[in-house]
Length: 401
Image (cartoon, rainbow, N blue to C red; front, top):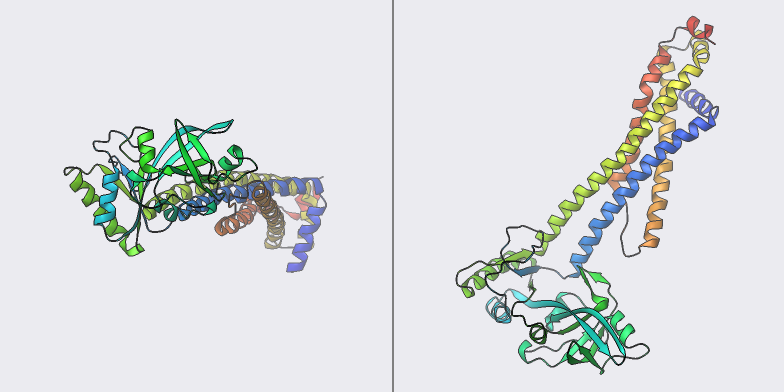
């Protein structure tokens, strides 16, 4: 029996039991499409987080008040023995030559009012350097001017959604916006950006950080983003920052200094584990599909006992019968795998359409692994029925009804 004869025999057997074949194809396809879709979500999450940190800029060193033993995940501040003040920020800028930018940040919530309109929103205190560090662009106007934060004018920059809601049909540049009990002149509007690393830049108002700290009666900033001049300077900048702040805080190492690479690596590890876990969950579907194929093949052998006996009576060897049934199982699992890949790819296209900002895409290894595993599962599941068929004696098989 040649290869073409084997394929024709297997295809004819599958066509002869259309409902059973369709259900087996569906089982394999569901398993493969589950692998593709779930790993696509995990990979999309990894790409999204990586992209968000890339938008922060490059060569970043992040300084947070409070000591935390960690290598990546941003700690929760608490029990801070010394504040991280604007004087500390100025010392970092003045004493560390490898830093090209030092951008402090303070965050709070207030009610913004203009004319008869008002809404609660996030107010962030920043400096002029924050624009470059966060790679921000303006839709119109100018950003917060450089200079001493303690002597900055009462100006602010509003997010795109804030501008649309509080200043409908007009430009907010030059208008006076009340934040809490104080008024600020709007000098610019941010280009639409959406949520970036936990902060919705479309629904934020940026003010000079000196005014922000006074408004909220604070001394300590929320965090400081420092940008090194090159990737080679990042580790040196981290050590220098710790040394300067330790010297200013009476010998205490009471801040946490994270590098951008360390944060990204930690998130990458977490998301890689998540993707693998999702793939494992989806692989259960493939296992169930394999059991389905085994059941189908066992039933097929039982129903086609006389057919097997006839083949062996005509001279077919045990090996040929074994290969015939294995080819049938392989065709079933391969066709189901390809159908599942198509369904999974269509699913990712639907998710991209629903969530265009989320980079859903299946990793190449998942696509290859899903197809290989589906074919492997089909072959393994078909071995037992095929061996059972091959061991049938011709006389006994022909005598069965």
